[in-house]
Image 1 (cartoon, rainbow, N blue to C red):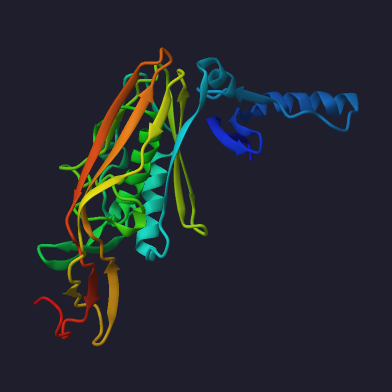
Image 2 (image 1 turned 180 degrees about the vertical axis):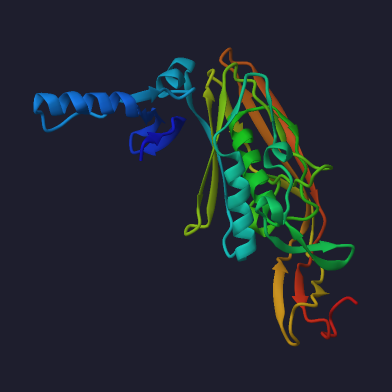
Length: 306
């Protein structure tokens, strides 16, 4: 190996907390090393140092320290028992957000950062319910990534400029009211970097633990953030499950594709206290319809919608 690329600062979690690390790049200077080797041979030396040209990363650990960057918040979700296509799409989408930098005043635009979702861009197809029927669509599971990013921004106290709840509660996301649905171009997730300095987005996933985390690093600024527990009202029981025909399934096969969930109106209040002690409160509201869940069945199943 004759070269190593520089790598911008990344925060690593240690027992003592988050530590900034970066990597200096280098490239072997072949001509200078050859000249040094020739001199060593003339002088009878048996070793010579390889001459390297060093390249500092654009954003070094020292730079991050000077900027006052620290861990602001983490968003977390679990994807327990997700099918393989969904795990693949979660990891693919999360990878698109890793090491994303936002300048002061810049908006995080989820759909723009993820880019087109298709098999050509690395996503796999999965079940979607559309028009009362069952189809496959690339990118199933991407809302796990947007939901995790929303929770990170919520916990960091960043202004949320666009967020949409799902039409019904999704079992993967745990407590209701903390999800963020995306579907380009009509639904997006956006938040604003108001920290006064650069903001770093880092993603971390653990397929064994079935957990996704998104970490935000920036200038703390002394703000204190408190996210209240979801408050539910107008709770309605889950409906009857749907059985949707999948032509790819053999006779007698049944696959659960979505869990049932009650309908409810949910509100989550966030309180942000700045370094002057001023308090700002805002409420995020979600309205979920009752949902009986869904099963994929063979076309000859009498329960399926034709």
